[in-house]
Length: 243
Ligand code: C5P
View 1: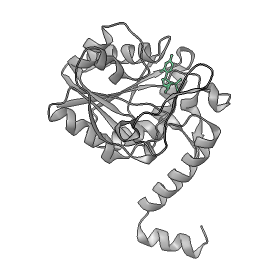
View 2 (view 1 turned 90 degrees about the horizontal axis):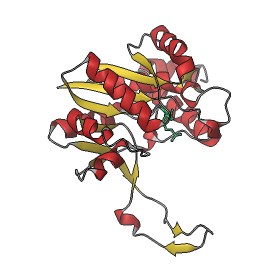
View 3 (view 1 turned 180 degrees about the horizontal axis):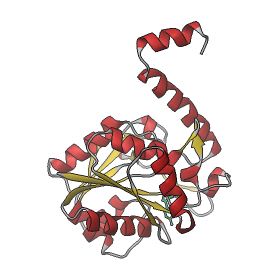
View 4 (view 1 turned 135 degrees about the vertical axis):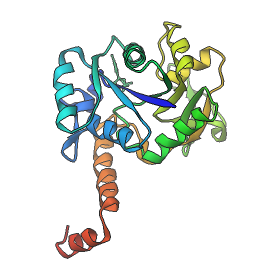
């Protein structure tokens, strides 16, 4: 089945306090977007990647990806995340009309392990119309009113933290976007259609990078991942050199 991946990266990412859009903030010398697209392609199943960039940065983003040797189409994003995904979806279906599985991934979750990406694709291929990677909630969660006073304590065993990529049967995602509604994630649109959304186990490395604190954690995560990918001989030489 043809799998395409959409990467909405057209936001400003002001919470990171950087002078560039969040997707272009660097971790260990490379922008988050490059890490995210490389992760999608490294999973070995994605045939085509479409990135939605801020309109003024389409050419610069395309050059960045090309220079990194990553094949991807870059289009101008829309007014909000949902609009950017909708535009990228339309482009993907124009380029690859026989697309069966669509992944929607956040550049801000640049370090989702390939195994999670493959698990999402496999669940869609097995028949789920929408699939999201999730993690259990470790903290107690409170619902509060506008004044910050606690209203309720939901049973955390029934709560999940949602990650990306989210996976969809292409026709389902097209129907969800035809609602012309806005949502913080695409599965939210599918829920409004009354279609069940399945879950697979996510991974702590698929954390969303939102604040400078998250960025510091991401630097450490990538250092550990890159170290574990080095051969035992290289690791031994690193140790001798005190790396
Ligand atoms: O602002 P927030 O972190 O929720 O944005 C989620 C994702 O949606 C980010 O990757 C951001 O770049 C993207 N986005 C987009 N188009 C917009 C606004 C946000 O692609 N107009």
